[in-house]
Amino acid sequence: APLLCVHTMGGNLFHYYELARSLDSQLPVYGLQARGVYGKHSPRDNVPEIAADCIDAMHQRQPHGPYRIAGFSSGGIVAFEIAQQLHAAGEKISTLALLDCFAPGVKLKWSYGRWLRRLITPSGLRQFQEHLYYRILQPLGLRHLRQIRTIGEAHRWAHWSYQPASYPDRIDLFVTAESGKKATNPLLGWSRVAGGDLIVHPVPGTHGLMVKSPHVEVLAEKLQDILDQ
Image 1 (cartoon, rainbow, N blue to C red):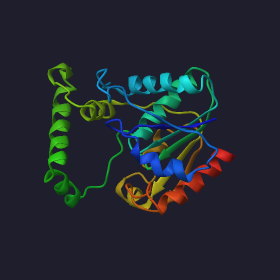
Image 2 (tube, one colour):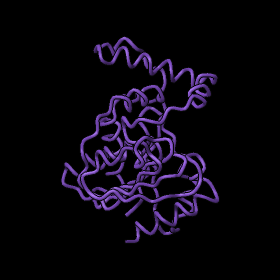
Image 3 (cartoon, one colour):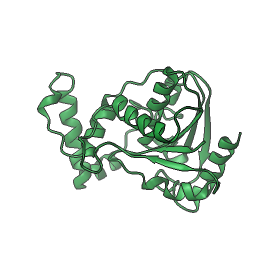
């Protein structure tokens, strides 16, 4: 069975490139791309629909489980929802690997330096402004007043709105020391929605470097051990 890797916000899949090359050469690895990346369709702005699109793509290569699913960073949240929908449909998920992914709604420890760095960059300032619009319009039911211009914006609104339910099966969570220190919950918030086993795997590097050489080799070895079980 292939390893199915879920896109991050904006439809990015490049994070998996070195990981795929570091896994067993006989293992098929597929990237699940987001709707709207190629401009043919408008992007989704809620996680369940994003996950449903991924499941449709998965079925083209693997009609039935057991499924092996991995999600890096924000892709882990969509991977989690994919597993939820497949489980509800009676399918088996043999692997759900969340790669340094913070659970929806998890609180981060306050850092003035990190907050300031976000505000002094154009992209960080843009996201701060977008989050402010969300916090004002979403509770009032006025989401339609905000025109979403990019896939990234649509996905951010989707992730901010997502309310995960408890997942009954095993979750393998890969965590860098850096991310573990940032979250108020040492398990990045996943203990709140893990109804089954939550297995934590420490990995070297930072959030961005864990999928790059040389750290990716350690990540790949640990993930391959799980897939081989």
